[in-house]
Image (cartoon, rainbow, N blue to C red; front, side, top):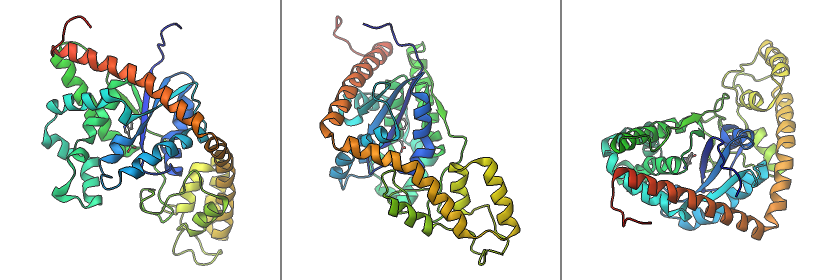
Length: 339
Ligand code: TRP
């Protein structure tokens, strides 16, 4: 056995509803790559959570587990350094969720801003699946079962971390000692990437996302479709940079110093949208080409990928089971005595 791994534990996850896109890359995949060297990182293929609003299509949720795993490997997640695991195959998470349900009120769940907003967006009203209302509890189970102290997520996930920490404090208070650590969200300094249509969030379901696996032609088409400044009709017109989707993307993928010069030029007038779009297109093609190639290579080895996530899930199962037992004991729940 190697020495005990004392690196801080990181956990993130992605719902397996479809392949990941550029928004995920900017929002959290990039920070995961940076973290995997000196942290003990777990990546959760969150199929159980995906089911909370996809009860009408469980097959899609199942099929996309491997797709998201491929995306992880394609962007450079190193399976030697990070553990990739499947949520629905970690029974301790489900058990822990049930346990935590007793420490969370329905009114608190209904106040969760992200859930609240999603209920409106999906038009659930009172027909919200119970699992969906409770997914913050399940996410608290995810985070705490791994004893994660750092959770790289997009800004919209901050209420989840807050609610998880509330549960942690509640459990620790009940146990009379710190069984669980609180977690800190790691939000990218760079804001969220909007959809190519200018809508606030890039999402596959809205059809305004650029998947990491997009072909060169798909990338170009998405860039061409991007909203700019509707009042910038001729290249010679002065243009607006704020709210201009092409500039928002350039902010994420271009060199800041060069971009300042371009922005000043655009504001003054004399810089056409086509020039900017060609520049962004080149940046995105350069970023995504190696990702697409690596993805295709891994996709040729489905058994290898499956073995990898199976091994990762086994490691995660042992760890999460251990935490669950520890919490049960700390709370004074029933035990047969000797293990
Ligand atoms: N809710 C996250 C999302 O929609 C996915 C997720 C599930 C997650 N479990 C997690 C993120 C645990 C961080 C930690 O993106």
